[in-house]
Image (cartoon, rainbow, N blue to C red; front, top):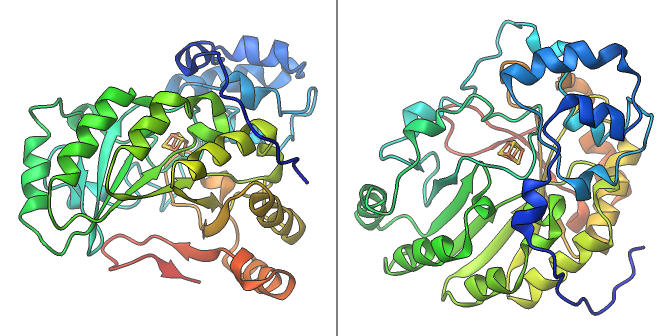
Length: 334
Ligand code: SF4
């Protein structure tokens, strides 16, 4: 159980913590006392998708353990360089749902804005690891096409800030963007998809809270935690601050072979999420992105895991097991 204490705001700046993230595989191996046998493969895979590990996350990785489930999410490996049939650079065909720069419209009622190409961490299985961020980086003026698109469709009631990670943007920018969105009468909810509160909890600082409390939109923050070891007191304090600011806090996880594909780990994840103040929301089947095939799990095993979660947890702690399929009208339950 994570102790629930009144949490003072941290004084170190999140921008400083972000700038100190580990980007050099040599340094990662040295800090974590890893056997250098796999370093050449890490250096080769790093050229395709660069290593990035923030220090608060690094501190939760066991030293000397190449199989640590948190390390496996961020360590470049030779398996990423293999080409596997059925895995592509745009597995969800988002390029077909991109009617304005920075805007993706896949499902009825909500649109997603690519607010920032940057992240606090680079997850090796990320389905947007090949995303053309250069074509989707509108400045303040270029966002107008996206705002016009949203304003013209009164069936849209929710805007999702995504990326990359939207919390890589500064709070002035987020305030401006949110004000533009909130000025469209039919928008009721703002959803933020982010790993920052888990990777760099100091990101939820006073300015961030002012941004969240300053909007009339209902806010939902969807975190991304795959393993119970990712959650510590710092994350708990960041979640507390989000909730005090009025946000609903949910979690989506990705099912990853060798990291969380067993019932005990997933049950422990749901229990610890709840103890941290977060409700489990989705458990995603891996999107078939080039370079991540080694993380994929067998379909029968996934179905069995869903059965075991339902058998061992109260309903409110069972995440929906879903996959995304290009062109589908919603996520597809398994
Ligand atoms: S977009 Fe999300 S999953 Fe992808 S690298 Fe960034 S934080 Fe990780």
